[in-house]
Image 1: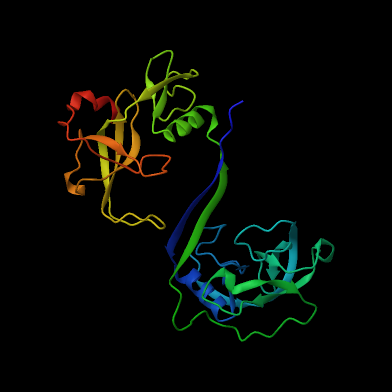
Image 2: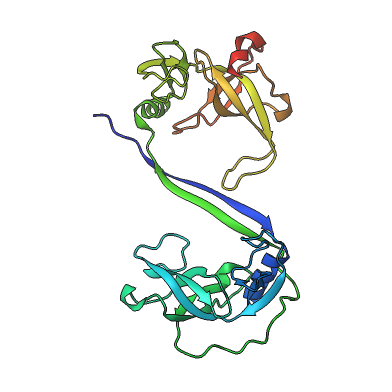
Length: 313
């Protein structure tokens, strides 16, 4: 049996968002070791605070201070913490209704084991040593058997308010390309590009998926295409990606390799970005030891006629 390929992949990007007055006050309060909720028209206090009443959809803005102590309403034990979680050793996820609040806040509880956690147990906030105006300013909750603290009744007004946050989003997963794409990847390592032909419509798809996207039938006949091709369309990239050592601006294009009926993606090099055009004839450029083309460059041939690639746009 051929080797089944697999590789760990990561999709990651920073998500930047601005904060309205309610969320701004809440996160600024955490930075100052103050927990704020928001009052609804019927007298409920919501923590974390929201900008609109989830029942009536009315605007909310009356901020009130609640205690950093509370009661666990439900919990779950986390046996295997993941990257980026509050602890690297087992801990409990808990919903805590803080004293003075009518809703519960999700966070971590530092506990020695699941036998020490129960619904109804009393806990308090453990503040982070360094606070920046984020939910992580609450390092975690910890068991507490003392009295509820007296509160000054903060009104939610602070100096130097937090007005925006950057939340990193990341997905780690293992990808297995399957039979068709494994053959495609293996062919690239020998500087060949191999697609598969549909037995019904006779189109050649690169990269192959193991089935024709039009007819829905299994594809298995391998067909070598290229190496040259035609730029069908393209975009100019002006924002530098993290961990990508390519100076901007550069061009990323759809390239229809000769003999293929589906365009693939590739970077265009060897030509000023403002001279790339539809119909440009290109060829792959390989680096020593590279398992796929580093980029495509002009071949010097005359541009392809539009009618030869219009169906591949």
